[in-house]
Image 1 (tube, helix red, strand yellow):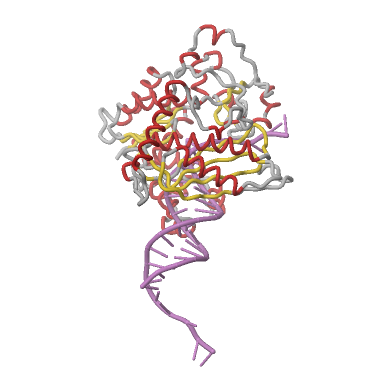
Image 2: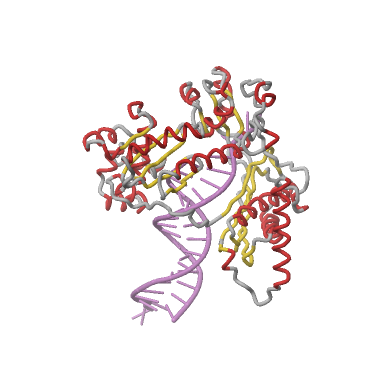
Length: 434
DNA sequence: TCTGGGGTCCTAGGACCC
DNA sequence: TCTGGGGTCCTAGGACCC
């Protein structure tokens, strides 16, 4: 079996550069929601030493020195470009697993003229048709394909495509010996620290460890990683999208909130967003949880992290889900805390077609509920999300996020098309953060 | 002042069953 | 005085991923 892992380079930053060529040679970063942390960096931003994942407010001086441009994240744009990349790649294999917004696995077993040639073709076609650079890693297991992708990206001699399985064994070992174990898929910060204590520092040392011993020391998960490094497949390619186990919607607020009323509005808004996702996937929720969180970084302030899960009769009715979410919120809320975040989680998900009835169900009410939900969706689809919503959401959200520097949704909004006016008159300035 | 959002899987331990 | 053996299910917490 030969698997490919195709991954877009600096995905969010590349999306922004695609629509504004003036950004191509700039140090550019894209920020997380609320303009909180750095979640993507252009090649130049990496060169000047902007770290991944760091809080933006700590980097402002460094950023000013290097004239770094910082943009708020624009998920409508990234989601649309992702779909185009995945579409192009799907033509190269009947078996594609879309693993995240910017990467997918493909089964290239038996690809002609060869998997490696196929990898090179994918790379040039995505660049030609979508305009985004990708890297390709090839190997007999997912973990090795991931590692090969790492080599394809970091080592210029591969020119973006690394067919690890074609290299002589000695050459493979030489490469693995040069990669820290923490770069291996499934080895995070905690495990790499523990491994180091046991004398395992490189991917090659991890590969040569005994699977049984690793299982005793850690868990079956890391045992699988070791086996995968030895070309023994333990992780299957997922055929379709896996069945969801939970649906979560949460946001940090633009400012801290202590009163119940604005928290209720936020929870109602997140319940709606979660219910939209639930209905898109034709699922019913059997439990609704709400959680609250104070700012964990303020160690000198009183902290409160409550949550409550309420069972409901399996439903996709926005009114019932919102009522349960607010009920839970009111029961966990305490005055006197400055809350930073709330969220709604739907669990115990079942497919709509397996709806379990109840002795006291009223089919007329169920029909009305469905008709109402469909009418709301129809209006919100054609006139914009949130055109029709429950009063519980309020109309002036105090919890709204910061997104001071979002670029236009070039590919999904007619009124934000990149016409001359929109692009050329807007001056690029380093992010001021005000 | 300012620190993301959305997921999955595994394990240990407790509750509960006969 | 002395208190079994063999299970399942659920949950919280911790690890990982992008």
